[in-house]
Length: 190
Length: 190
DNA sequence: CATAAATGTCAACATGGCTGACATGAACGC
DNA sequence: GCGTTCATGTCAGCCATGTTGACATTTATG
Image 1 (tube, rainbow over the protein chains, first blue to last red):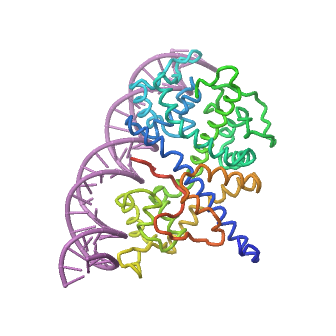
Image 2: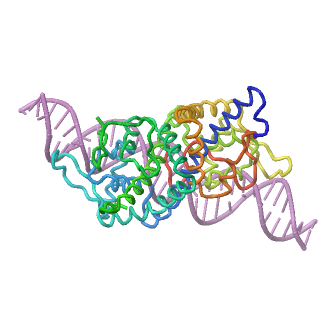
């Protein structure tokens, strides 16, 4: 800060420092963000992979296996391992798709929903605390930057409209034509 | 949270939606953020654990093994596996500490620094793109929210105003964040 | 009816966490 | 100066979760 007025080189240096800090912010935030759920999961003999499945199925009940695979970007064999544990132990149920009977639509059971709530309670609290402390305008900036970091347009879409108008979703020309879509309108792995 | 859809709770619902989006922004951003370095590492037969070591040592040359362990929050046995590969293959060197000869101070070789640059180039570019697209004010908001998400005060400290520093303070007990994936309780595959 | 798609499954392998036990040399306190 | 603690290394085995490849089943579709 003190020598910010130095010529040329220094600006570049600060830029590099700024980018490094961006990298590290992601690391620390993610690390702390996942720490507490991991501890809970351990009591169930589950890992982070189970958490991801429970979270996204809870988010989007009735999603297909293919959709889940597209989000997680893992192989079906990897998913299968955790998913069948969750099904066997009664956290998730699979129902044959009504339109396409090849599909297995995924739902949380009550037990699964309980666990989901337990797992995300701390995460929500953490986010809520950070949002509250930072303020609405900062939250909007956070969203903008995070969306910029996310690579695929399809992934960004999920944040378009279902947005929290509360503080977050503001104006910036996002305006994606498509009404707020309740669960289940998702990007198909084309 | 799944049953917050009750009528009349619209504000609460939006709040819940907003918090869920926060959770998902972290998931997707982190997923995409680590994808490309992983691809580079594969060509070297390395994984994320190697990336972390290279990143931190590059960030803070001369750090001790103990400091690195404190950053990564893994066991010395886990670190040993990757660190000795990096040393054996000439990416990292260890020098006996001048003040305390028990310590092994860590440095990148030229080869190591090359790899570090190659690995973080994409991550910096991704951050830079997101920052540029979002604007300075959004970046400030991003920083605020991310710092709010980070739990420990000691961790937040490293983002204070190190702008003029370049290297970590090399304080015992704590160090920097990094570029790969935060470890968790048990197993963490590449 | 033939083919493709959605899903499941078996088997093998790699990475990188973990624990426990034990070794070595250097620093430090008494 | 001796014993204890500290920093580090190492061996050995376990576990979670990623990977690839091959193949089976059911259903949709041209």
